[in-house]
Image (cartoon, rainbow, N blue to C red; front, side):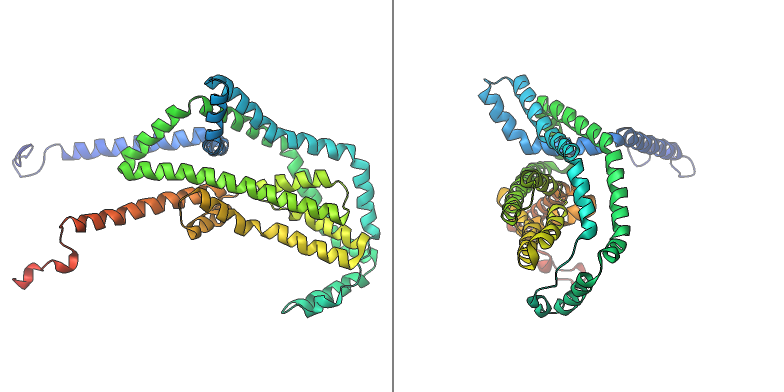
Length: 381
């Protein structure tokens, strides 16, 4: 089209309002399509996100299973799907069965809390810097209180815990539906993983070129590294917690250790198990054993914050600080799934930034003048 095509007699452009209206309608239709699509798939986003993370993290296991089963993908998908179902559902089964079988013992233990007597604090507590004196004074007040006073103070908290527990039991059915939906999506991705990966690569290449494809591969490695870090850390936390529970003589060690593992994977931490156990140890074995177990419980509940980023760093070629910020920040921002989203987002951003900076260096190395060597036209030289 030349410079004069489409001009009217008064110098205006013929058809420009029509083109603007058409473009506006196209953008509105596209926006409506995107919003409608998001609204339709919104109930499946959580399950699909978890399914994508699980598939990427366990894809090497699927390939090993396929090779072990003579290259039959369908059989490997069936084996991996059944294994995933067992990993997700067996803990629920044993947990609910154990609670039902020991309901009377749990009720008796709850009644025994009403007569629980707290021992006096050991002498070294007051010597702890900054907070020792306050802790000792508060501890002495609790130890001097009668069981009725302690029960009166704990009653509001017990009511909140009971309401929370009832709410969680009510949402158990929804949780099971999400688990089954996640497993179904994982099975579909297992069966069509190469096609999905090829489509994702084409999309990121169309979006950001070769740099986008490199970022996608790095994101996949980050997901696998996060999964490895979470599982290994949860195993170590549960083993350390189980050793402490066994030495302290806490009952139901096996069940409590399994519960610690589930809580660690869910990023709720072993404190929900170990802190009540510490109270039990204080009541049954005295301040010495109770304090030692409490220190061990604090160690078990905190070392994952340092170990997990180290393990993830070994699996993904990214700076440690980037992994640490991604894991902690993602967990705070998005919950459990943020453990994967945080490092993946930062890994993609970091890769694109490094490629962009490196491209500028390569451009300067190939003879393009740097900014400080360009002469301003107004200087006349």
